Every structure is written in C-alpha cells, then in structure tokens.
Amino acid sequence: MPNAYRKDSQGICFLGQINYNDFIRRHLGVKKGPIIEIETGKKLGEHNGFWFHTIGQRKGLGLSGGPWYVVKKNVQDNVVYVSNGYGTAKQYGKVLHLDEMHFISGNPWGETTGPVEIMFKNRHTPILTKAKFTHLHDGEWVIESENDVQGIAPGQFAVIYDAQGHLCYGSGVITGQKVD
Image 1 (tube, rainbow, N blue to C red):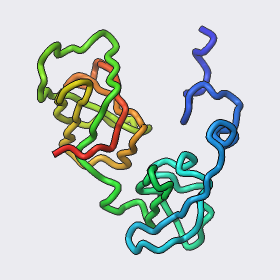
Image 2: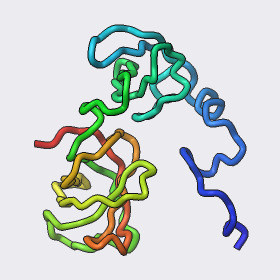
Image 3: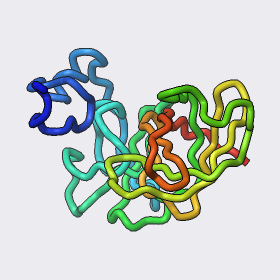
Image 4: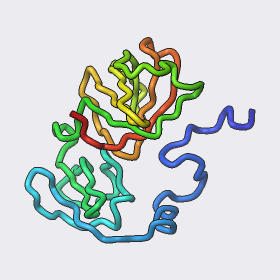
C-alpha cells in the first residue's frame, strides 16, 4: 500500500505540504478581532480571524505573560477567549451535541432513540470515554459522558464506538448547542 508508512494526518486532512494558515488565509481571508481573557473580560490582543484558532490551542496567539490557551470562540462576533492555564473548568464538559452523523454501515440502533451505552473520543486523544448516546430528532444526537471531557470544540468531530470500544460506528460534528 502506498500510504502504509505515511505519517498520520494532523489538523485538516490531505493538505500535504501546504501550510495550514496560508491555506485558510487564501480561502477565508483575514478579519481582525479581539482576544479576551475569559476570567476578567480584559482585551489582551488581536487575532486575524477566529478560524485560525482551535479550542485548546496555545501556540501562535502572540500574547505575553502566558501560557495562554484558547478556551472559547464567539464566531458571530469574531472573538477568541483565552485563559492563563489549561486547567480551567470552562474547558471541560460532559455533554456533546452532534449533527451530521455519519454511520459507517448504517445506524446500528435502527429506530431506537436511546440512550445507548457507547465509548467515544474527541480531539486527538487516544483514550476512549464511556457515555450514553441519544438520538433526539432529525439528525440531532447527544453524547453524555461519564467523565469530564476537555476541549469540546464546535466544528470538531466526535467518534462513536461500541460499548467495549472495539468497533467504530461512525462520527458526528460537534455543534456546541446546549442541550437540557
């Protein structure tokens, strides 16, 4: 296989040797916005567009007095929120709201709305987390994790596995919508 020894992709897949920031700048442009410390509301600097930053990001913020981590983004107002330290509770949550679910071989639960026991992961972590998975309606799904999950980021994917973590069922896009 030609890809057997190829390094795993990181970030946007299949860009190859293309620089991520150059690619994004070319396709989305630059739009200045504030970088705000989430605890104080103080403006610490400016960024060139929220789309250049991901939740949990530390590098490339251009801020002194760090380390600073991206903990939240307001995409409507083009605001990036940071915290001085990655241990802040604001980066953790137990509920992930998903849409655009893609099941590899069809929905394994059929018409069942749930909740069903699953394992899942988000971000680049190799660790699977136990959770309950519920189908709300019209393509909307909710993962309720047993443990706090770090860096829940809208636009990223959550990958769904069977309850033993042996079989990958598919994935969905994290929307960030709050579900009661």
